[in-house]
Image (cartoon, rainbow, N blue to C red; front, side, top):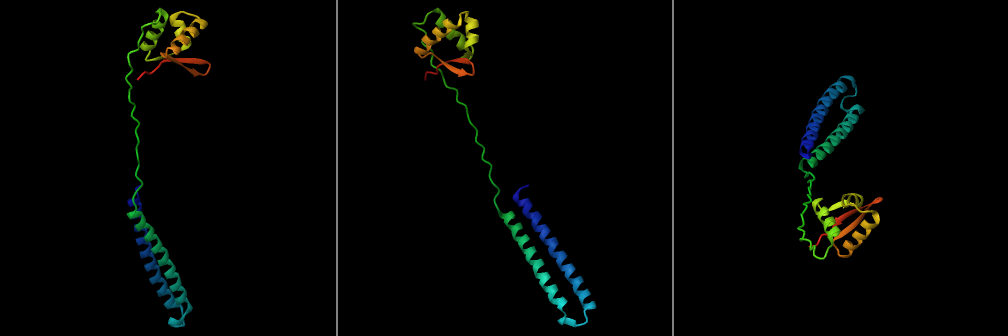
Amino acid sequence: MENKNVGYLVLGIAIVMTIMIFLFNSVIKDNIGLTCTHGPTCEMYSSLNVQTWISYLIVLIVFVIGFILLFSKPKERIVVQKIKVREKRKKLNLDGLDKKEKELVGLLQSENGGMFQADLMEKIGIGKVGMTRLLDKLEAKQIVERKRRGMNNFVVLKNEN
């Protein structure tokens, strides 16, 4: 619920409490008048007055809480959205690369820029040592980058902007 609605609810409760106190007070005064033989000097009247003031004080506190809730500003929700900006990749300069290097770069480009090293080995058809040497050359030329993923490497094209 919003603060305003809760404020109205609390104010309504305070009004009902005020009416109940007024009704109970009038009934109790009538009963004291019938049962007390000392008249207006009876101690029950002073006890009733203290109880009435305590009741009205409690109702006043409830009224104040209701007004505070009614006029307090609800907390604003701040929504932050992250916008992904696609970075344009420069066209890679494949001059000076041998056949296997061009094949590997082409394969990475077709796979949205990244693959696991084991998958690359399988698709190109070379062994671990050959793949490691091939990737070392391409990393030295700053064309690819290996990222460690547990026991595997994920090979990505370097972003050259």
